[in-house]
Image (cartoon, rainbow, N blue to C red; front, top):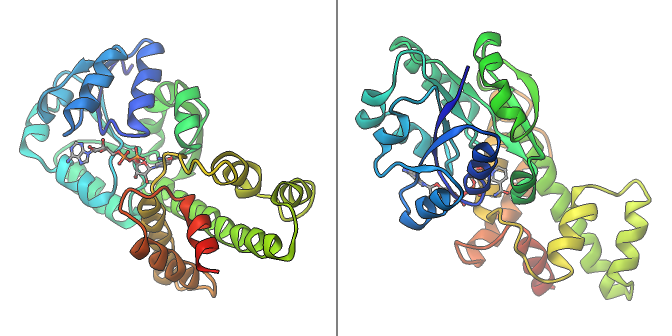
Length: 289
Ligand code: NAD
């Protein structure tokens, strides 16, 4: 059974996920390049890993919660990490990575006897804090079964398919989520100009067929109050949309809308600071009109 976990990437999501794992009784060895992020994990009850290898040493599983596939590959390929892995240590990539890169990475790890699964999440910072993430799991039955109790401490795991399938469905989910947020924002900006009250619009959408996570959560909680503090960056959302559009193209099903939605988010990303929250797409749209 998995009892000791190396956790790498202690940001908006990895920070609260580390706390949940500690509270569930796992021994967590926490590493991030940012020193304050490591200190916060120690305050939550984790052991500090001052170098990458220290997170992996003696661990039954190593969880990655990093920005993207490129960083995942560089961390997993780090000689310090590889040298510290015990035989059979399971690598679990919970980042929103690129499914084809995940398959390549899993293949190269399999050649040196290291098993890997993918398990990206949905539910945001709130879901991470409250243990209510949806966890989309790809990999072999045997490896997934080992990790299942870890996932149950973080939320609700769902089997997606073979290795890379979790990352594929996660990207597709975020293409939906980003497109919903864009069109919801267009509708509310237009309705406001017409003279409609945004709260009235949202309550009607939420009782009608236009409802989505954008009308039920993002608009009322982060956009109307003008806090824009969902904790999910605009550039991370754009990354996920591009993964989904590339997946569709490679699958021979390029679609009509996805690439156009990406182009709009690209323009917003070019206008907004690198730290912008993804909900700021609504403010960007409103300011353009
Ligand atoms: P974040 O930027 O807040 O955190 C990433 C962390 O990784 C940072 O603390 C950073 O210092 C660390 N890091 C970067 N390079 C590193 C390296 N080489 N070694 C060690 N640590 C390194 O990002 P986040 O919002 O926590 O997102 C993490 C992943 O989860 C992304 O793939 C994102 O798309 C996905 N995701 C985010 C949310 C959300 O609501 N924020 C929801 C679902 C999925």
